[in-house]
Length: 157
View (cartoon, rainbow, N blue to C red):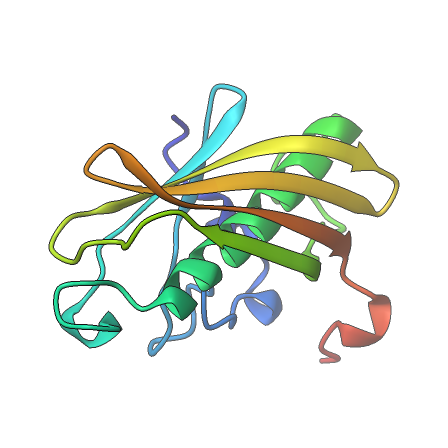
C-alpha cells in the first residue's frame, strides 16, 4: 500500500469534507489507500457511532462508502490520466449517486475495512463498487457514481 492516503493529496481548499477531510477536526477523516488494483480504508467506529447498542449506525456505513468511493474515483482519474496523485490541476470528485445494501448488522468494537473496486472511468464520471467488512464478514456493499467536481464548487481565494 502507498504510505500517504489518497485524501491527503487533496489541496487544502478541498480538504474540509465531513467524511474524509483532513482539515475537518470534527469529521471522520477517512484515509483511503491503493492496495494493488483496489482501494482500502480502515475505520474504527467510536461509541457515538451507535445505532442500537453494540451495532454501528447505518448512516456512518453509507458515509464510509461515499467518501471512500469519491477518493477512489479521484485516484482512478489520476491513474487513467497517467498523472501522479496530487498533481495540479486537482482531480476532486463529488457524489452523483450512492447506493448501499446492508447485508447484516455491523458490530461495534472491531475495525471496519472499506474496500473499493473501480468499475468504470469515463470522462468526468467514475463508478466505484465498495464493501464494508467487520471481522472478515461483509456487512454492507454499495456503489458510488462520482463525477468530477463542477468548477463553480471550487472555493475562490
